[in-house]
Length: 372
Image (cartoon, rainbow, N blue to C red; front, top):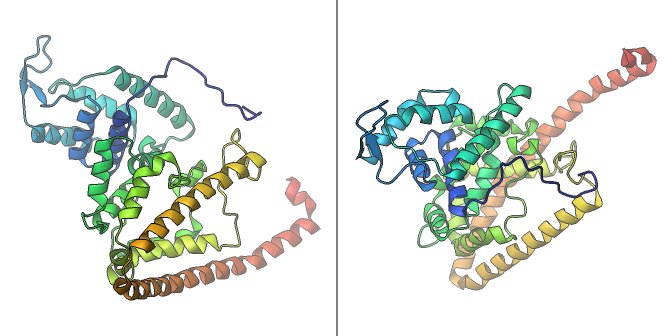
């Protein structure tokens, strides 16, 4: 509301869904974007849309179906054939629901209350959005929320899976798995070592990330919040020596350029660092917005100080010189790329000044141009 209160408009689309079901839906969205049909089939079992074991109908399109147990791989192949060959199903939830409906004549599909509810909700929202944007993709739009849900699991099983997928038992980061997670939750097709991907990153300063369209930053305020417990535990367990040795190595060139782009954006004088927010949300610069941002920043800094202090206390004296050397090499390499990006931005901005100056002079001499 305009006075800052939250108003719920109840159209009957409200329910309470267990955390593991929501995590299954989030992983399912990521699976559709990455076209990982095995993971999508697993997510469908997590949300209890497909039984375990999978059941196949020996009498398709019959009023008296005969269900028998079948292999999970057979269902994955059928799912990939049905959804993978339908481009609309990979961008619209309504078409995905239609594809699964066609698949239900051969394989048993269950419909819990929350599945029906969410299907109706997504299809309704998707239909409204597509009126204004025919190219609207509900999956890529939901990716920022999906990323936050995946890195802040609330169930014990999901927390264990996230840690095992990202960290080894000795605290080393599994960079290939982490990059795959970030890639599929950002809608990017860039791969490490791909020169085209690196050039895309170097030219990214004139583009905005998809998550900034609504002003939502998926990881903002997460580290110090109650949802960030798993993330804090993983940061505490990371081996700092192995981390910075990798970041300073040749294999981490792609990651260093991402850090450089973030730093160059932070020092960019042409635009503010705050994202646009929705009209009914606390406006940027308002007292409520600044109070919320300050509170989040304080929590993040407190959590980060605790993690760094704990990491420092666990460091051995013999390991300190190699860590300092790796950090110095990493900072030198990142600072060089950051300086290049900043200079490129300044050069582009300065090159546009004459055009803007002539436009300003023209509007002063001919005010009617502005009116027309």
